[in-house]
Amino acid sequence: MEHLRLGVNIDHVATVRNARGGDYPDPVRAAKLAEEAGADGITAHLREDRRHITDHDIEQLTEALGVPLNFEMAATKEMQAIALRHRPHAVCIVPEKREERTTEGGLEVAQDENRLAHFIAPLREAGSRVSIFIAADRRQIEAANRIGAQVIELHTGTYCDAHAEGRLAERDAELIRLREMATFAHSLGLEVHAGHGLTYETVAPVAEFPEVRELNIGHFLVGEAVFVGLGASIAEMRRIMDEARNAA
Image (cartoon, rainbow, N blue to C red; front, side):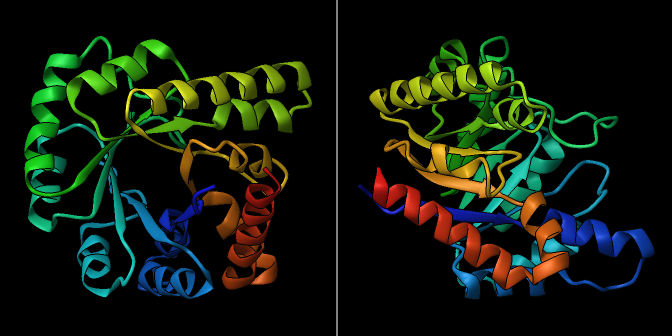
């Protein structure tokens, strides 16, 4: 089975920095530590309201990283222009609402195919791999494939929330749905990633999916780093992922 990549999202290092202002803690330093601890890539979401990652962070990350940058962004002209200027390894198109605390679900692709197809075309032409963050839903996967996305990232938040709240039947049903949709997307020739809300307790079953090539994890790792340090939190996640992958 192929190596399962770990993308570390450093958004919430910037959240801590911005709570007080100034330059500390530095998300670029966190990204370099993540790289040293075994991260295969770094994810950063430049939100329209700049609530955590800033334009300067993206500039610094582009220059400093030795691993690929996955630039999460809304499907807006402003974000498209920024992505085209920096030409990151990958861009992941996500839904975004100003009032949400975190991304609440997958992008609605099927009802917006024409606009999204034209939106992502210049990004692909510039050399960035285009990923679409979507729910584990056949209709959305088919639409993502039609518009020319190379990658889909399956939203694992529903599965993780059900686990955390003890709704085990719902958790197991969502895990089955994720597995089936990972297989379906792979059959269409899409590369499959997954992420959102994953923890030490929830990551192993998703890591076992043979079609999934990359997991993107952030908030939990940054939170755990308060207690054990960022390098240790990432190393433990890497260990659990690899153990599950090898067992599968």
